[in-house]
Length: 424
Image (cartoon, rainbow, N blue to C red; front, side):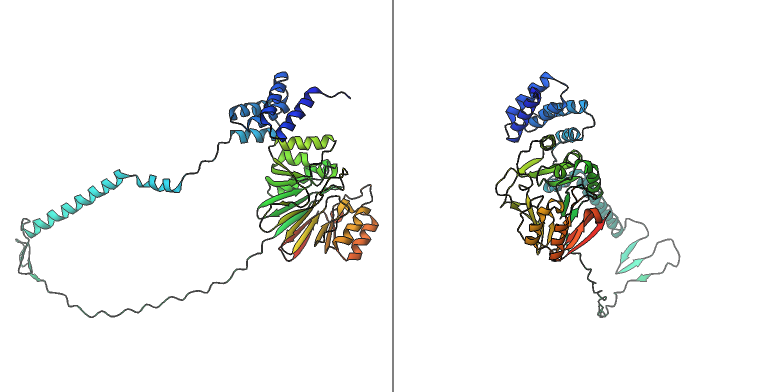
């Protein structure tokens, strides 16, 4: 099958962007749009590359061209909005104080009015005391009446008798004893979302949202709808355990709908159109791509930590190279092994690997969980979960939750205890 030279050149430009070779990427995308000014993918990638330089206006022009060629593309719309958004300017509170104090006109007017009132009162008092006002005089402590009015009584001014003041006793008002309001302990929520035959888990802690896997492509719209019902517009992290379709199929819908800050995977290249499309969208959406391996920690929140348990090295088998994640919430641990079969880390709750295939049996024996979650499609053609796996779980005495039976399962962890509820 012949390789499209323009597509090959585009992928080379994307590779340059991945490796932060911005100038080389700009040269390639510039060449592509000169050859074909209807290539909206190239226009968008050209804009992404230019937005990493000082040429912001040129980047806006590129995004506008891409959007005019593909008006319904949400990624292009989001990139254009970001490019046009000016940086937020915060006003210094001290400067605000100084600005409010610089009002001399108002202060001077107030002083002039006060001064005028004082002068007027002073002149009036002087006129009364000096006898300039007819009918008024003061003699020997007596105020004489108004002349011309008969039988005007003379009022003698006598000093007031000062009595000993009666001490006032202040009775304090009773202080109401505050009734303590019980505070709800903070919780980390694990949403094991029903995406049929696949995996998708949302973790929420302290206002942050992490999505691990996105199920098959057929369940992408269902996953997006569920995330929207949780009032999510931004995903702080999206983690792909491995590049099989039942784990990253819904990523296309997720990346096109939500702002994704960081995309995390094991870095294993996989020869599929779906995988290439996902990585292309990650770069186009300007998300940070982070490649991790065993021994690393993923910063999350003060209450929940994420550790990478495996793999240390890649074997070339996507299932076994799955990222195995341990989420620790104080005294409760949740293990998310993707489809890796050889899991040995003990945990409180286990997302059963490989949807309950026979390969999961040894992991269940090693982990010894209090509860297990099996993400599996109803009536799937693989007969998952297998009877041997279910027997191993029952032997451990673990509580069982299944998405094909219970629907979406939400487990709340407060650090010492966990509770689960389900909905279809």
